[in-house]
Image (cartoon, rainbow, N blue to C red; front, side, top):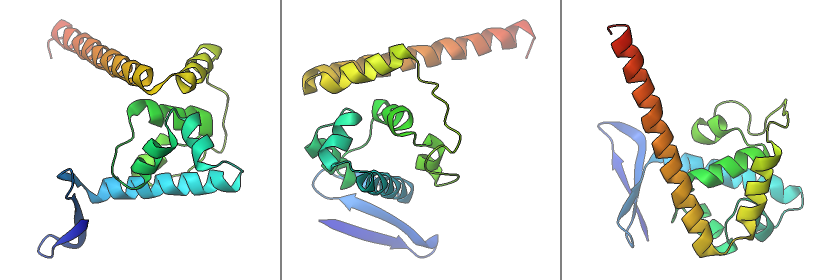
Length: 160
């Protein structure tokens, strides 16, 4: 059951959705993002994709994807990357609604290794997918820390 709460003093249009079962709060921005994801799926449905085939392409089961479409689960970073490279969805558009949904001038920037990784991911069972997603999250965090360290070292070098 969802309850909409309005804060008229801040803005009439701001809504917070309380998912009472899990006590999660999803902001308006996230709801709009999920609505854009539904738009993506609707578009690809007209291109002949079923919900199951669409979900499998981005590494989700049909039920997981359905849960995401119903705002019960969140998309992980790996799935956003898959949307970008497999379905040519502009991540900026997905986050903000600005720009075009699908890249107008798409160049195949996805190299053979990345394609191989996504194909392998789609074939993995759920436990292995979860392990791979955790590894990817860990690598991204490690990269973020390394980048932060490089910036810090540069700032120290130039006395900033």
